[in-house]
Image 1 (tube, rainbow, N blue to C red):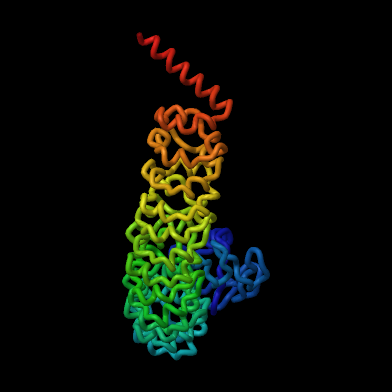
Image 2: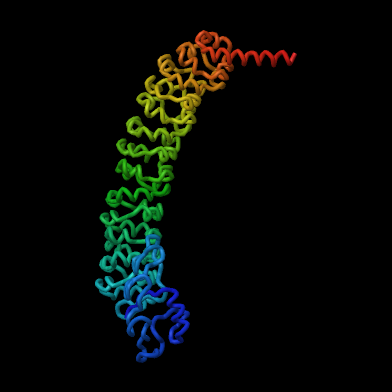
Length: 455
């Protein structure tokens, strides 16, 4: 006879009143004849006839009680199975599942497994799992699969893997999925892989991921890619990487992106690059960014450029900047712009600089400003010149300031003007605004006063 889980409050009161129950083990069957029943028969339970389950809190008599973590009855919560109080029900033939061996499991008929509960599965010793074959695994309900532990999964023979389908594989607790070894995983039907979820995939050992074949990989749902870890990405062969699409790439966690090496990254289809996000791109090693080809670079979405880091920008080959757009370049941070090599600056289209702001302007190195071409300088927004720093101004050349128009010149901060060499100031002093003249004269006056005070 099968009894359902009772509340902890009920058990505490019930066991306090009855000496017929084994409180230590939580046994549900009376050892001797209980009052009001024949020898060996269970005593009448409060709220029902002899043998009938008592009404459970939160439901009618016989309704499963909610389990901690959100599960109901024998359906395990998503973070793993929580066994109910007391021993598991006996399995077919009156066998205590805790004492089952591989031979006894192998003696059961496949249709016997349809009645297994998560609690019964959870109670099986790992050594008993060797008695499973594909038919017996397939006989288990998806609900029963939620009782598996890592050690039990690890005890299943490879030939039992054929019993997994998407529903049964997807019902395994994430920690149980971590019990698969390479031989087992390689024997899983490709179709079953469509049941994988992100938190399950995250538990796989990188060695197990390496054992996956291309047919299995192709069946992974896009959402599962959110579970990939850095070490797992490192384990993927290049031909798997070549199958990535933009959604899958976009679903990868940023830290997983850091697992790509140069050869893997070169294998990524250019079309997949459309899925990149700034937080992901920021995790790429500079040497991996250096391996990017022009087709991949051109497919990066505009927003992704906000993730570029200084060393990554330095690693990009100059030819990458030939086609960069104003929308893309405007996403660069000042720190990223500081990573621009002079050779890369020369390749930037003047039109790509038209959305530059003052913060970005402050990021250019003096060497980068020195190599800017005439049409690049003239295309700098006047508001961007408000970000010119004293360090930059100190090293400006005649060639640079000679291309500035009046509006650009009048946006330069007075502190930066003060840092310019006198002969450079001479090229632009006629275009200074009255306010700049006044402030500049004040600064010069202060400097003169400081000098006179010294002497």
